[in-house]
Image (tube, rainbow, N blue to C red; front, side, top):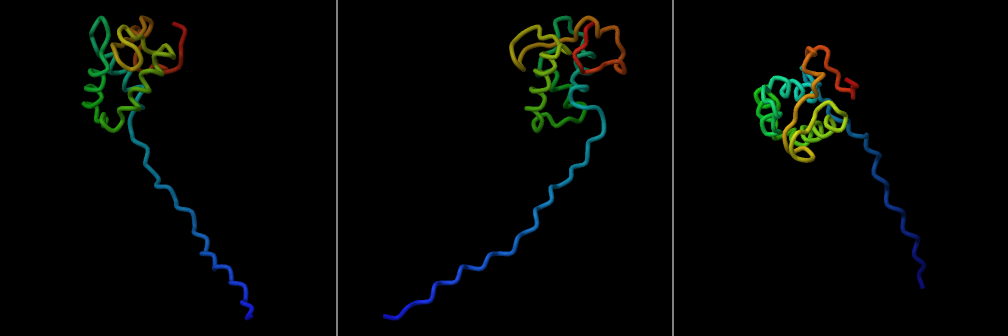
Length: 118
């Protein structure tokens, strides 16, 4: 009986260099939460501005609403939980939103998106 030589292990492929991530340039202009606060502030509605109206205002300010829809909804809900916005109707990201009373006297330069005791 003929003995067979053990099969040689298959040669390993050379290690590939890790792919570099595409570097995105940071967009100029204010951040999305600041744009949302500005949209709510410029609304003259007494009971607040709806989410659909906020998205329309953002679309006029060159924000791709279809692409950043999830980011807008998340930003609005975070701003409600932090006390930056007050939700007058609805739950979650739906409904109407307005600024607290203490924000009305402030200029846009004085706005901070941190929870502030008014």
